[in-house]
Amino acid sequence: MPISFDSALGIHAQALLLRARRNELLASNIANADTPGYKARDLDFRQVLGAARDDQVPLERTNQRHLSLENDSGIPGVELQYRVPNQPSLDGNTVDPDLEKTAFAENALRYNASLTFLDRKFRGLLLALKGE
Image 1 (cartoon, helix red, strand yellow):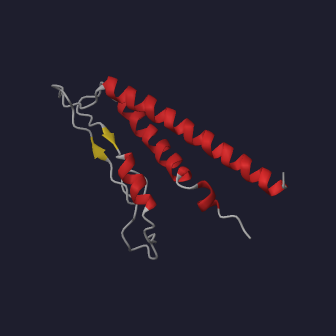
Image 2 (cartoon, one colour):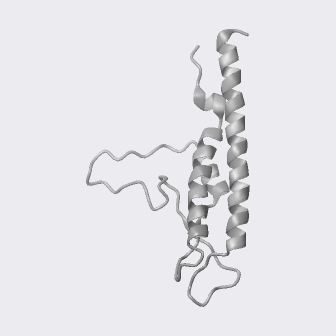
Image 3 (cartoon, one colour):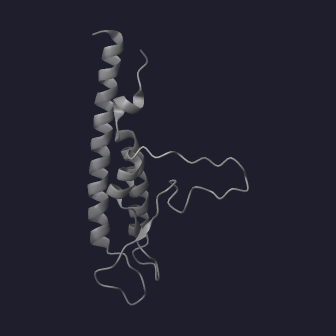
């Protein structure tokens, strides 16, 4: 009986990709903390991951004249959101450096936890294949 990686790994493979994209967004926000008019962006991780779990029928672009499925997030079906600032700045920048750094640290920690989980899952699968 063949092993299904989707069922063996669960949602963690998708979570890893989403966390990596979120790290890019948060790093961009931090890098642009002093850029006038820059609008901080993020994605709602729980909403996106919840949608990924809903066994939706994947859409496919079958003709070049069809609209692209990807948006500015780089992930099909995922809309980036603008962060609402707690205290708007006079130059129109909405980045709160402390908030962004905290979100980045938390997301990086969760990213590493997903990597650790997947590493252990693969090790267990390898042991099962070897018959140990």
